[in-house]
Length: 293
Image (cartoon, rainbow, N blue to C red):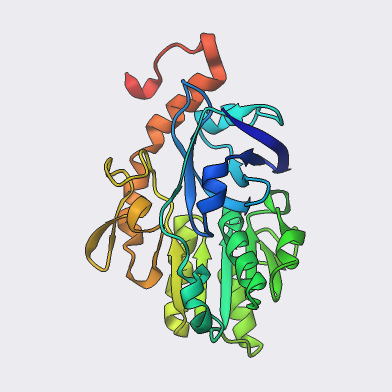
């Protein structure tokens, strides 16, 4: 078992777990992820590494309850543990590689984090700050209750702009609206990293293409094994088939076929919904849903 050192409810349906795992903590870099299982019944859940501490031998994971597996996960507390943690998986962010540091220092960088995308954005911004690069960050969510890590982000970013779709906190609008407003004020960037829901990343890329900003996205399709063998995370980039778990998760956003990727993800939703119902209803679940009939 991999012991949970700290468990915290960050926001509505969003939970943080700091987990003891020496092998992952000593090797991981910003941009990478792990796959966890809570128990023998648990599904394999890919989670971005939100932070890591090599001295404490821990990694920090942030989870949003969506399906049956994450619904079980939310009940874990300090002293409990995960049955499996596999990682680090995927390629690290190119911005956070020592060999690219001198080129990175020349860039004017903005991160756009949508919803849970704040979790994978934070370690990249933190790494850059520690290496003398202060990037700007636009943090967006649907509403105030879903925001988290605002203070942590402010401690490592150049400027932090917080937005909510409903105007309950910060700038009233989406991340793209905030970026337009910054450009109207005379701000400019030459490099953008957008991480969040696919539809949000698609519209960020449409805007940044107009503005001439090179844009990287972190793709988050369904994954199973994390090694490129299952094919669940298949996507098309620049008319070539790629697998997010081994070729990514980061890709040139202006080359990603977002419509195709979102169509593939939609195919999994019905089964995921039935699994969640079964978990919530327990022994009272009938064993099938209307969709099965």
